[in-house]
Image (cartoon, rainbow, N blue to C red; front, side, top):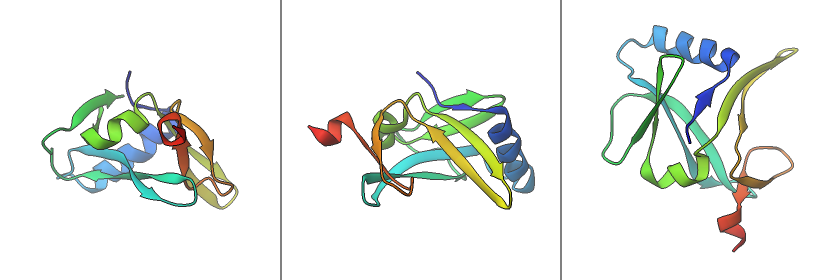
Length: 112
């Protein structure tokens, strides 16, 4: 599978990368948080780390650490603007439930 960026997310990430020429790409993963268990992390990748899997979408490299890969593999990242609000949105085939506020998610493995 892979991590992909929708056109709007690709444009937004490219803007961040243009402003930070030393960045290698996007770092994407998860951390334990929220009421459902896992929250997304998206930041500029400042270095390549041992165990990273690197995907490429539209010429942008996406770095995912080994621990996060099982939780996010196959995710499509989009960027939405609704009125004054702007946010990245994650279409993750591994998520089986999300909390009411959309900040965290669970997977089949968490339910087991």
